[in-house]
Length: 332
Image 1 (cartoon, one colour):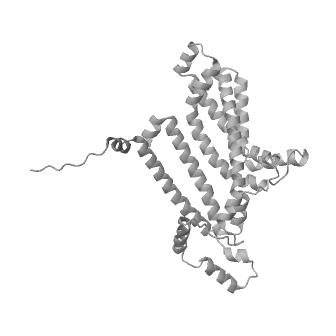
Image 2 (cartoon, helix red, strand yellow; image 1 turned 180 degrees about the horizontal axis):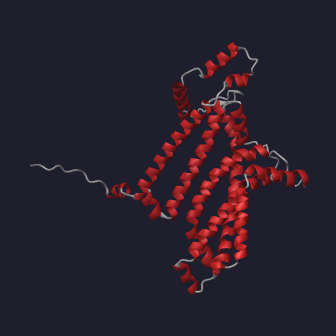
Image 3 (tube, helix red, strand yellow; image 1 turned 30 degrees about the vertical axis):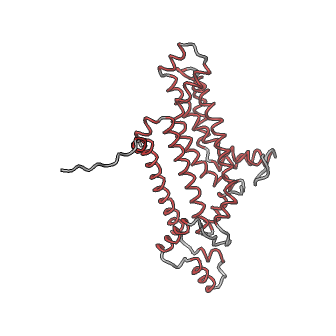
């Protein structure tokens, strides 16, 4: 009887392979890959299900039929849908998003020119949300804990609900009417220096800031009632240290999750706000492309928005894993 001796794996390799962080990362990356494929497929199918001929829409109703046929053949629109889908995937693998049906511009070039304007708007609005919601939520939690200041709590709740219920585009129209048309404090439309950012950023940030402030307040109230906060008070620590160094980090998990979801919705909200302010970003371009049935342009812009949302969710998952590794990694 012979026994086969297998070479032992190095202890470091065994520890890495059994690490819960590795499984966490692999599962999150797997979800990201599957979500990305669903996004690509959905963006392709949705625009192709829209009735109408994109070539006829681009060339006009008076264009000769021979020119339309030649253009459709050049773009591959006469191929079966499966063949078009395969060519689309091949183009994505090679970084080719296609050419606009309407303007013959490269989709990647158009996105590269307009994406910075949209990203600036979304990032500034997100920072404004955090700068307003977190201090406001913490302040209201401290001021209204243990049933104090009932009137302030009621006013805060009503104000937050009302502000959160106003759609971004209606708020944008109202801001333009009051502060741009009547008071002339800010530009009416377009990107014309730092002042032109104020109204679009405020229109995007007001609703999410109201919602996030309520969430921060509720989370802080729950944390302020826990034993370690009472112990910190019994030790006569300064209130600022108790609230900011002990209570706030423990209340940030739910806040971070919701903030990540809000950022994704704010990116989508830029589409309407950009159209109100004639902002030179992707939002205005995707609306005109949908109306013109410009398949490659719509697919490319939807893909950029979707990938942005998936990346934000992935970053939030990783941050939650770092902040609360016991629950997040076990759940993963």
